[in-house]
Length: 122
Image (cartoon, rainbow, N blue to C red; front, side):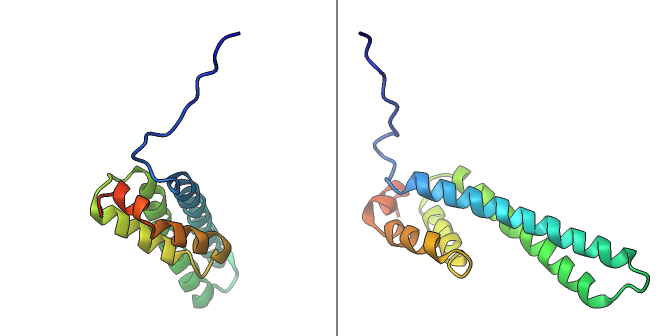
C-alpha cells in the first residue's frame, strides 16, 4: 500500500496562523458586504421622492468605513512577516472585539503568545 503524503505548514508558522487567516478573510468579506449595503442605502435614498440627508450620510459613512476595513482585513493574510505586521494584526483583532467577541477573544489570547510573536520576529 502506498504512503499518504502529509501536508504540513512550515515549522516557523504559529499554530494560531490558520485561525487568524480565516478570521481576517471572514471579517474582510463582512466589511465589504457592509460597504455594499451602505452603497445601496445611498442609491435608495436618492431614488426616493424626497431624498433625505440622514440615509445618505449614514450610508456613505458605512460604505467608506466598510471599504477601508474590508481592504485592511483582506490585506492582512498577505502582509510580509515583519515586526510591525504583528502589531497590525493585533489592531485588527482588537477592532473585531465589539462585533465578534466569541471569535476575537480566543484569537487575541493565542495571538499574544510567544510563538505568534516569534513568527513575526516581534
